[in-house]
Length: 438
Image 1 (cartoon, rainbow, N blue to C red):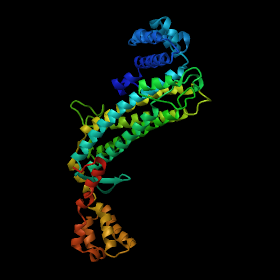
Image 2 (image 1 turned 90 degrees about the vertical axis):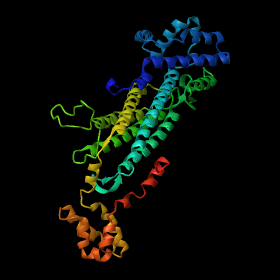
Image 3 (image 1 turned 60 degrees about the vertical axis):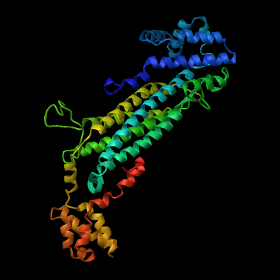
Image 4 (image 1 turned 180 degrees about the horizontal axis):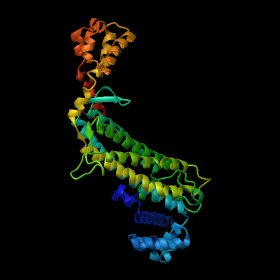
């Protein structure tokens, strides 16, 4: 990803210095296991650590790249450079292994490192959402369906809904992390013909992974497909929150607004503009993350025991999807934490339709009073349409409607226009989402 949408900690996971360090640890731990089995001398295993356990500086990375220009093979270039530091004992490195043992196991480590950062991002977002949910738990606002005024909800419920969604996102990411955290050190075509399965078990334990039950020379790509699909779903949740904020910031609504900092400019042409640029950006970033999902799924069907059609895809989507989602989650957290809410606009919009938001309650009251649902619906709708067309207030029209007034009475009709009726179970919902109501 371009620096504009990247954060350093996630970027470091995908830099060559980290990749080659992981490659070295895989090879060195494998040598330790081979020494324990008596396949190579213990002194050789020690020599690997003593000679190779050095930082992968920019100079070392550049040297590996130069070797690869000749070998046309990245793992051979790596082991060739490593041999320069180890000496004669380097002949024991990579014993019985194949390149995918290093590449796939390394990718598993990198994806688990990325998942750990994304989990921290989600935790920060959950904390911000919970704070805003309780801050505005009781601020009644207009609920909308199809973009049209429906019935009252609260601003706090909006934040609570996103919180519940990102709780699910966290659980899915934990499962995807566990699914991807597998190690394959099984040799050519995955049969362990030239390497003892103990080596795989040993390396997996050292790297915090689990052995892949059956690797066909590569770790099965259904694991990776699920991982990137999970990132795609999380990105869609980011976008859902962003779209809601964008709608609430529209001039005609203006119930909420991204924080507009001193000196910030909204438009090069119109000085009055305060645009929802951060949340619009989040919509775009979500598209980039989801862009990785289909290629990851197409990687599942490799030829026979392996091919490398997946390789070029993963070199791109691995860093791009994780770096982008990391940035998007952090940006959404910042937007939520600093979002400006306008209570006066919330109240104005709540009252905009002259009481029509209570239409369902009137409908239900009429059915309780003995009218058929069909007749009750007609009675409510004919008065509602008058209000919709600007011909009065809903409460006044209902009280003037003979059929409605005879069924309910004026005082009972007035009692139906109570916002508290719609928010009486907000505490129950909060208890379900947060485990507490206050």
